[in-house]
Each structure stands twice: as structure tokens, then as C-alpha cells.
Length: 250
Image (tube, rainbow, N blue to C red; front, side):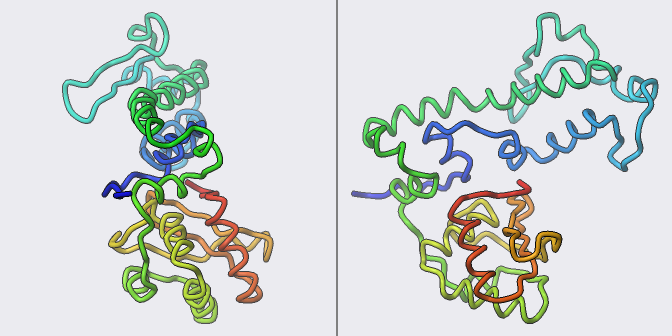
């Protein structure tokens, strides 16, 4: 049948399958919120300075209460995280509850639209079939499977690996099927189609050696590839990472 020209984030395709959203996936969509909540939870300033209880209350209590605002532009829609949340100030002692409730609200925020989209999909795709798919399978069924040319991929990549690892990386990419190259692009950038603008291939952690999997920070268009002892191992670990859609850092 005719495919639809739609480009949705990997997270959205997963949600349309009825999968549960994880907080690290929300962080891909809203990295600034994720970083801010981490600072609140750890009672640290963005520069790493550790607040005392009094310093934390001085920094946050006058600016934050138990409400969240939704919407892309003003007027924003405000929602209380608890009854009377507008009059309950964030404090050092309530920060854990605050972060937990904000995360819960952010996770719930997408539900209404996703439910409506899923309801529409279920008119055309059996739920029994969708239950067997991952996000990439659904995207391919709805929007088609794009072809990612290796030379075009090279032209948009900034590679920060050693010379040998760089050669291996591109030979691994060249040996991939078109579907796997799409998954690689999606893994690194959150998009399955070119162009994406410049994306980055950087050296990953060395602590786990050949057992480590590549991971990605899609909000920064970056894939981290550990230093492997052979091209064969690099290829195997790349394929495992992109096929399982384990983004790692998010």
C-alpha cells in the first residue's frame, strides 16, 4: 500500500506500539529538563557545587512550587502535582517527592495524543501483529524503509576515532544491509532518513573492553563506539546495539 511521509522520533514509534515509556527516553526529548531535575535531586548547582540545605532552599524555594507548566507557547497550562501544589514550595527535604512527581507528570503528558494515534493505527494494523514488532518495524510498515547511502552518511559524519578504528567503522557500515544502516542512523540521531545535519562518532568507554556495546546520545546526534580489538567484534557489537535499540545514554 501507499506509505505515509511521516518522520517521528524513535520514542514515538515505540509508544504507538503500546510500550511503556522510560524516563531516559523522555530525557532524549527534553534534555534541559532532565539535567535540571538531576541538579535538584542531587542538590547540586549546574557547575557541580554541592548545596547545603539552607543554600538549596535559598536557591529553589522562591522559584519552584509543586506545579508544572505544559505547552509550547504562552499561555501555558499549569497543573498541580499535588492538591494545593501552587502554595507548596520546593525544599531540600521535599526534593525527592518533587522530582518523582515531575517525572510522573512528564511521562503522562504524551498519553492522550499517543492513545489517539494508536487508536487510528489499530484500524489498519492488527494489535496481534503490532505486539510482535519493535519501533523500527512499525515505522517501516507505515512510512517505508529509506535507503541510507554510505557516502552520504560519511559526508554528514564527524568521526573522532583512531585511524584504524575509523577504517573499521566505515567497513562495518558498508557491510550492513540498507535496513541496518537506517537503524544505525536512527540509533545515533533519532532519525531514519537523511539529511540529519552533522552527527558525531566518538570514542566510547574502555572499561569493559570488547564486551562493551556502543551507546548514543540522540539529542546530541552522537554515537559512542568503544575501542575494540578487531573489526569483527566492532561489527558484532554495533549490530547488537542497533537491533536492540538500546540507546544507552539517552
